[in-house]
Structures are given as C-alpha cells and as structure tokens.
Length: 164
Image 1 (cartoon, one colour):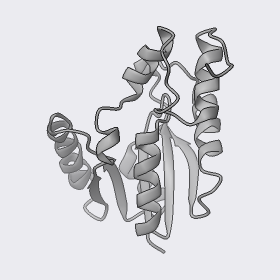
Image 2 (cartoon, rainbow, N blue to C red):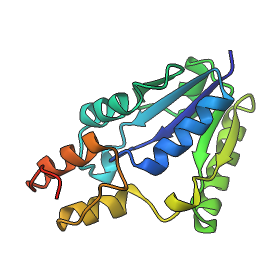
Image 3 (cartoon, rainbow, N blue to C red):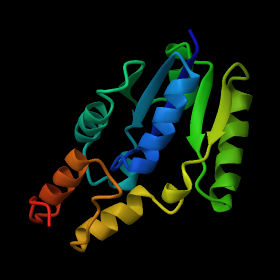
C-alpha cells in the first residue's frame, strides 16, 4: 500500500490544502493529513479543534484520514509506514524553505521521499495566515475555506455566523 503523509498546522485548513489533498488521494492508496502540534506558532485553533475541522473536511475521501503528531516528521512517517511526504508549493518563495526541509528529511531517513505539489492557480495566493487576518477583520472568507471552517472562524472571532 502506497502511503503519503501531508503534514501541516492547518490553522485553519483552506481550500488550497483541500486541493492538494484531493489530488494526492488520486496518486496514493492512503493519505494521512497529519496535523502538527506546533504550539510555538500560537494557533487560532487548538490541536483538537484543528484535527476535528480536518476530519470533517475529509469525509468524502475514503482513502484519506486525519491524525496528529508531535514528533519528527520522518519518525511519524516511519511509524505510519509511509513512502512519501507531500508538501505544497504556492510560489517560488516557498521553494527554498521546503527544499531545505526535504533535504534534511532525506538525511534523517532516506527511505521517505518528498513530493512537491502545486495547488490550482486559483489558490496560489492563499495561506492560513491571510485567511485568519481577513476573518479577524470581518472579511468574507467563503471562497477560501470550507463552510464548517468559516463558521468555526466566525465563532472564534465573535463574528456573525450567518452568511452575508
């Protein structure tokens, strides 16, 4: 069984993340969306909340599951018997950091490959950080995140949950 890990903080999960997940699901027998603990970033959503939001987004993808981890990514990949790590690249500016991480992961465990995937052009500008800022300021994020994520963000920022 070909297994891939798609790691991230997913704070929150965006439609760009979903695009990568859906396309990875076509390439691998099993995809694990691995939510990183990463409390150092000061997340909007707790690990438990992020995991629940991701799980809800994956209900229609039978070969995709959500999990969380707080270890080295390559250790988690080995534990899950994964052959690949999926990383999204939105722009050239992402490449240097992601390339460095891929090389380090290869050094730590040469059996795990890193596969870079680009989201659809309509999502190349999208990031969780930008979506949080738009929502925090009361902007419309409907086209950037799944509906249940939009509602969760509205509750966090104490904004109206009814669609405008």
